[in-house]
Image 1 (cartoon, rainbow, N blue to C red):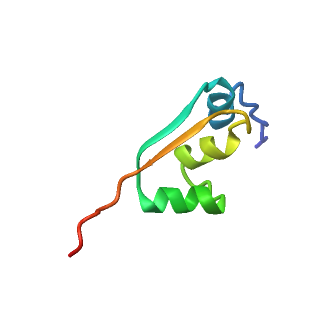
Image 2: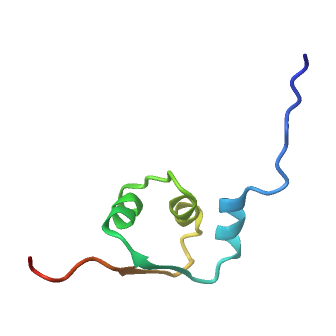
Length: 69
């Protein structure tokens, strides 16, 4: 059995980050905001966000319950 190295033509989260003019997360859960704040990239959204160039504007719109229970 031989193992062939597969070379990806495209790395999705890197390429998406390079192509973005603006990065918007709406609605952004508290969990997603925390992952972005701590640099956790365990899904496509957070991996793409962390791959963005520093010059790409980012808009995060929190969407949590504002009612006191």
